[in-house]
Length: 558
Image 1 (tube, one colour):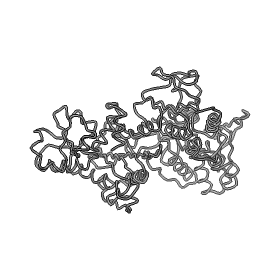
Image 2 (image 1 turned 120 degrees about the vertical axis):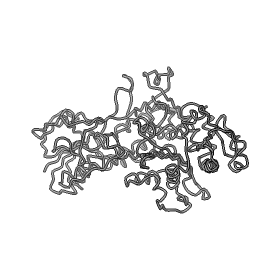
Image 3 (image 1 turned 90 degrees about the vertical axis):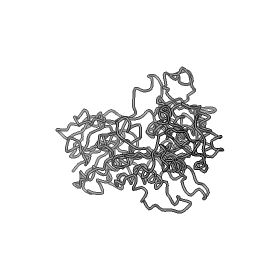
């Protein structure tokens, strides 16, 4: 059995090495159009920033090492340009000479991945992506040749763009970050992305939201707002699209999402052809629709699944949750499942929980605050998604939530998870348990909540906002128009409350919940502002409704 694999990075090499472990007799040829195979593309930004100092550490394998260990025939600088499905052959072009050959196959695995999105940056503007070893070689050589402080423009504030910004700043480069949307880190909801925006400003990054690059300019680039910013280097990180050109030309079915359509065993509509990696449509774990998710973990998992199928041991691929994580200047931002804005776009009912716990017991030195958001189906209590941003402990909690979703645990069931506790690692009520307690209270009707973006409409309809924080907290910053009745004085000052629907809030939601329980038990109409003052401040700042610098100072001091 002869298997040809097109693409020699994550998904392709996972398929090749797994197939060899299952079948020692198979003939396996890997064609890679680039000059490197099996390189650590996720580590490329960190080589630019000097975090990874040895370039050779990025090159996980070579054609020689793969031949020695796995008896793979790996051919770099070879591009597959056509597939003849009837003859079961591929046309291969040597990129360095242009010479073409034809190779037969019994099974074919397409693992070409994704390509940079085109048509966003203006014609004539010299840009680099940050996707290949050649990219980082060019970037590091260019920066090394700049006299004085270098300047760079990064286009796009997603995963790769933010990683590029962080590492360029580490290298001493002045960075302008240009984002056509209204927030940084678009996968997050606006209020959850606010701490990332704050940190970029603190680090001296010139962030331009609702802006695009219009044209090249002398010594830099011209932006859509008419300004010109300096740029020795322009990095294009506006995103990627599935590389489906080869498949489409061969009549392989392309899914509605734009990725190659595959079944649960990674097989395409041609029984002899499989597809894996970033160019493939995944099945969304929330609604079973086709979706594009470009994650190395999924590429490796699906490469393994394709090899199992080819070797006669087919399994069923699991739906994708889209679990992802980003490090940016000491912050960690992570997500799983759907965001609130996606739920709203799809018209799907949902319940929201915001909490702001510490990473571990606050009496033990070094505790760091996290902001957590949980999205729940109000009818079934199923977890639909989550986002977390903060310091230490974020990665641990997002992985727990991803595991809970995979296992079908409800939001209320998070209260019953028995998680490891010692004061340097967690609290007796772990932040995951705390999310569950709030979700359980909402599901049971023990408390009623209002979201930060619903507050203005509720007040316009006649509700009165009561701030139950201390007088000192109230004086240091408050929501305009709120009245201050500290929680510890609430029972004695009930007569001061107006005869109207009430919305109570504290700093993060916990005291607000206690206040809401006091007031609801004496028959008052009351809701707790979910996530408290901290979530509201992050949310309204993200929408430009407050002075950015003032709001940033309030959040940092909080």
